Image (cartoon, rainbow, N blue to C red):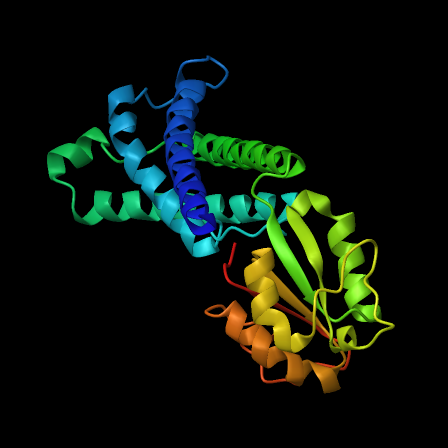
Length: 275
């Protein structure tokens, strides 16, 4: 269910970005040539010509956004991440559009079309397109973010999180998750080998649900989506076996691309889903 929801969300982002880029390109033309705000010195190209080019420019935007990782949904993505991702992606897409139109115009266009200036896009239109695309794409992402957070506040679509370890590090992780409820996570409790002793307790009203050997049963019973391992290094390796089997196929983020040993008291995140 979560994966289907995430695919739908990605599809909505792609469609919104594609339509936004078309609207931005058309809007840039209208602002440049129809408002009277800018002096027209070299004649006005026909609007339908720009409309024909708009879908190809919009496709470039979507491709560059994909290469930028903007469609990899992460709940921890901030507004700053979104803004700079959109800004850099739009800059690259604009540069690709300029280079592509120049290349086709110089090497693949017939002499008649070249004489008409068929692919000569106004520099003012490119500049306005850049501004409008950044603005509209960022606004659309903010709208989606607000919609999702409204759903999470109502308890819809929350990611259920289990923390392995109820010591100082586990409690610190719990505090961070509880303090940032806007990210859409819900703590279900802890597992820790201290659950086998009579003096074991949970934290902040969250229960100690079992030992590390019972992770599989706890995950099934509590419908856990993500596991956070928050143990001292000497206990970490012991707990990662059960946690890793539950979290597959995703590899822990802390281990990706690095063989450097993690320091004692490190936190490892494992998830069934990358969203």
